[in-house]
Amino acid sequence: MAAVHEKQSLDAVDAGPRTSPALYSPDLAPTKKEGRKWGAYSVFTLWGNDVHSLGNYAFAIGLFALGMSVWSILAAFVIASVLLFLLLTLSGYMGSKTGVPFPVMSRISFGIKGAQIPAIVRGVVAIAWFGIQTYLASSVLGALAKVLFPGLRSLDENSFLGLSTLGWATFLTLWVVQVVIVSYGMELIRKYMEFAAPTILITMTALAIWMFVRAGGSIAISTGHAPSGFGMWRQIFESAALWVVIYGTFVLNFCDFTRSAKSNRSIVRGNLIGIPVNMLYFAVIVVVLSGAQFKLDGKVITGPEDIVRSIPNTYLMAAASLAFITLTIAVNLMANFVAPIYALVNLFPRKLNFRRAGIVSASIGLVILPWNLYDNPTVVNYFLGGLGALLGPIFGVVMADYWMVRRTKVNVPDLYTDERDGEYFYQRGFNLRAIGAFVPAAAVAVVVALVPAFKSMSGFSWFIGAALSAVIYLIAADRKKQTLDVDGEAIAVAAA
Image (cartoon, rainbow, N blue to C red; front, side, top):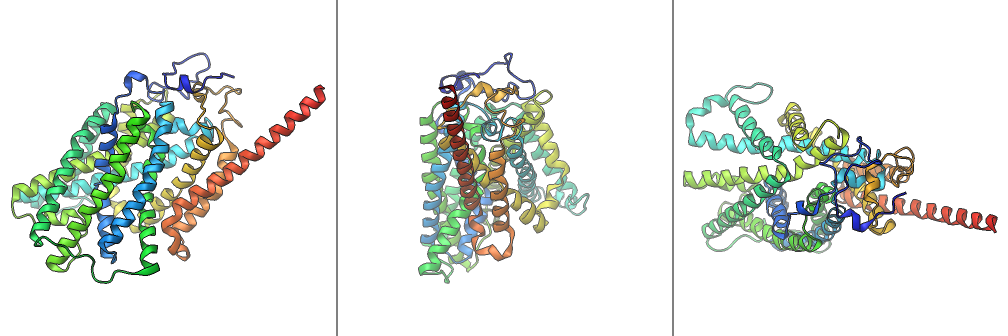
């Protein structure tokens, strides 16, 4: 067996005699040193875009609508940002050290064939949300088009497969834009995010200042029925947990991006500014927007787009809307496009490369008619919610194996071989200990997330699943070690 670990994991693994075409392609190979162009600013722009997505604003403003005070919301985001900084930094180190994408990283713990399980789960969730986010952005574009060109209103009065002519035009426009960007690979995605992040930060800062001035230089601290005591702290921790769950997808495949990081220092610096600092700044904008609007008319907005529509100047309103569309594309590219691309390349490395997999992924996101999914609460809550609950147990297995069992030592060349003596061949390509830890933990996580009887614990389903799978995996790994130790002693005695 090859005994190549940390040093070689930073270099490219070229196809050799042990390399299987079913496991290797240039897109799946470790990133070469000259391809590591992601510095601290590049990592920061991931969060500069993703944290400020429209969906996240809707979630955070919803906390204010539920009665949480400004200070409770800020406390929840402080707690969540600390947890996410730790989780994402640990996850990011894995990508930086090995240089491999998430489907290949999963081979370490699940086996060369078993890795398809976490990759497919992550990919299916991402494809569905890619279509939904594109639809939401197209709705903003359609509304903007009708304001700027009133004659287009007639194109919004019919329906074909659930969308009007205008709806199809705006959806396909944004769909094509994203496919074109992805077709040029990760480098153009990085450049687009570096452009989009300051755009949305400037826009949201300006919008918050404008609302603060409109409200007379002060805001409402709460809607008037904020809980106190134990109820307040329970709400704070549950909100923090839900915020972490939102990033359960990103925590899992952060290595897709950090495999191109210049160093671990770049990851830490980018995460430090992008997560605790940026998330707290996001929370401040949220409380200013929602508190100012509530002070003005006693109403709670559903998202910043509600405020954008009230901007009296048409051109400024258009500029803000375009900024939101730019943001949504950036979020979609990194959160919902990259993961399924690597999952598809991992499934069909001989036939698909990054560009072709992007087209296939986008096509699936189109043919599922995502607007019908979004308009069906059952699908969103149970199907996508159930799949999302599986991500915690996957994370628990991967992290326990990499950090606690292997102590970060990875035989990178053996990630690409299907020979029986390969370190990650296990039992016919499947690590039964990993699957045995994942299945019961996943069942518990799904039940906690979806069954009404566990509603009070549903916000913690990701943590419960991750912790349970990690514990089961560590127990199984320890038993194997004890068995090997006993067998080793028996052989030594027999030899003596």
